[in-house]
Length: 452
Image 1 (spheres, one colour):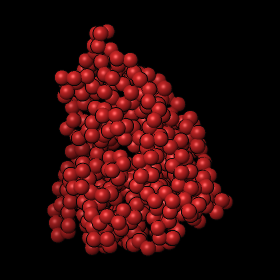
Image 2 (cartoon, rainbow, N blue to C red):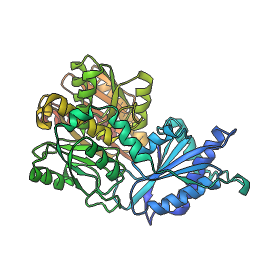
Image 3 (spheres, rainbow, N blue to C red):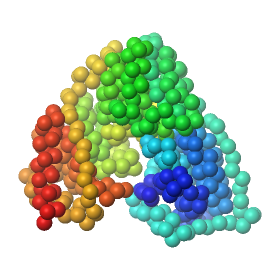
Image 4 (cartoon, rainbow, N blue to C red):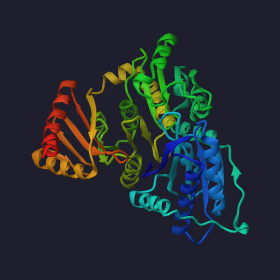
């Protein structure tokens, strides 16, 4: 699958060394086409997947053959790789990762010189280079051997620590259970928590890519984390995905509080100190709006996708942003989702308030989010959006990405998937019954469209 930020496929199936080489060569050709007057530098990083070594070899071979200067970061988090683009003054990054997907998946993620995913128009151009089998290989005189750089973890930890009260957190001696799913976040995250004075109980802390459970940090996959929090009587449980950009949280009782709270709790801390703009996508909880309003701030909504959130943050000078899937973004550290930032800010909020996670969550208005999906072709999606616009014309509507319908006590977001022939419907309301009722109202219109 070729998407807005790169490529994903199954190892031994659709993802082969040939495909990886073609895609990376196409990306290199695109970079050289856009900046033809100088040699370009690209950083390469990978998560810990078992297939990562051959994906790295195929990708780096194509980059070197294209005459690019390559800095190999080895196993690093996606936010770590993004940080190194800026730190090394590189022109781009290529990251071998399939994010939260199961072990049989891998892929390539591309970042531009701003360390963010290319805008939609550039992403489409890169995809076209791939489909056209474009490459721009050089003669032997133009080859530059790749170099290694092992400083990512240490620099990442330092940058996060620069923005929190290390002594204040350390004085609390929090016991933290961390599940790194044997992913790329193992080393840097354990280092960060240790430097924050935490007593760390590290589950799945070897970056060998042997995922001990389904790697997406959802409640059903984190039963072991919840049990260990209770057994250890820990203050908090943290869980990462394989490339370390998403954070899920369990409270002091082991209760999974959900990925939505990662951004909301961090915003509670940041906006309490620096009132301003927060940015989130249209499918993220309105808890963020409540927190922002309590601190005299406001929320800007964007289409789904990290790149859209980051671009809006940079344009608006936002102080915090992210997505409801556990993605927390502080552009001062990394212009992208970063689980290390999320953990540090949550611990900072706990230390500054003297409150537990359960108490902090209890202070925030609670909503229920319900998600559903159904098969839908792209051409049908357009008809559905137009029908919903007409039917709910009296409500507050946002059509940046499908359609979001806002009522005083809830909202529904209906959008076509970028990667599958489906439409997703997400609703949020004060309780499950109200959310279900909103989805039913939207489905009634959709069924009329599809039935006709």
